[in-house]
Length: 468
Image 1 (tube, rainbow, N blue to C red):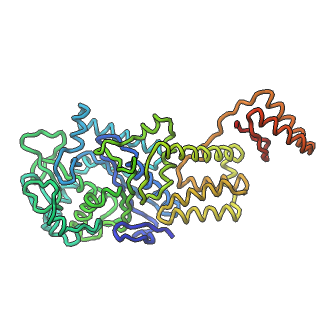
Image 2: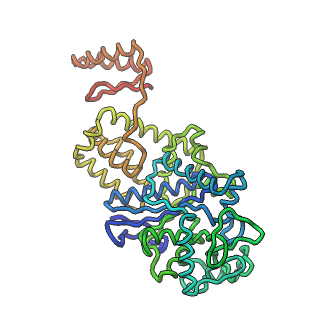
């Protein structure tokens, strides 16, 4: 049974897609004005595990991810500069060049973290017509108003507004201290279409029924999600910071335009912290994946690190914690490499695991199916490593685990060990002693080999040598 914690209901629920085995999945993608930081990437890793888990359970996933390349302002209060325009000024490039460069950078981060790409990429700037059409639907149903700044959604017309975040709307209206756009009726009202200022030439602007301008940030996700997944679909994901504004507004737009439920299940990933504080571009403390690589870490070490906490728990990042993850991950890679040396993938994939290994696979899937409990799943990996099952069975089970872990364990290779001639003579002599069942000589030779800095372990296909 596959269960997820649904932010909408604040409860763990059995997952039941509306049209099984098909699953519609929408994940909020990057705003491509800068590099994604590793806090952002933690969310994309959790969403990757989600997708892999759905596939492992036999579902056919249609995964849609947006690219925000217009309309995301530096403030959630519909004031401030468009982040894309800000990025263009920062680097002295066009907005279009900025969008293309950071989209490619994001996709490269995905590749390095072994994230499965979405089935559909959709850019906000490629879907202006769909966004205008959705605003017109809301306008016809009486949910909008026009001011000098643009077209706004009137949240007082929606009795269910804020249900995802469980907002205290009355309290917000009574004590609002947020920056307000002149003419905006309520603190929670939000822009659907922003009109270009008369005295400013924007790089990205389009004609609309209300005048030249650009879409608000929230409208793009509602419009594109419904275009590719239908007016009601199964799962919507993102970071926990998107709950009170972005996802709340997505629901308001979609459900008041269609009269239907927008999304059945909402999943949100918690923050990655640095020194117990939130990581973010606005905080000025964000680290990129390239920073991690420049420090000498494999990107998959960071992927492994994120498994050490549940996706709904805060995770504190430090270089010391990442070093501990690297030590553990290297041990797992070494173990996998030894299995890959001793057992072919053909052998591993053709074997029927013994009852013990089959039980491991069942327990692993149960952990993953329990709201993506990766810390529990990871503990089962190490329990398998330490078990006394046959190498072929361990490899078959580990490969099945890695379809969800995505750590590239099938490709792990042992580092070539250069064995000095005098040590090789001791190894050969020990093999002769073992063949003659001269166990005392064999043990003495093992000790001599260890004194030379090498550990020898006996296997079905001959001795395995490890540098100490």
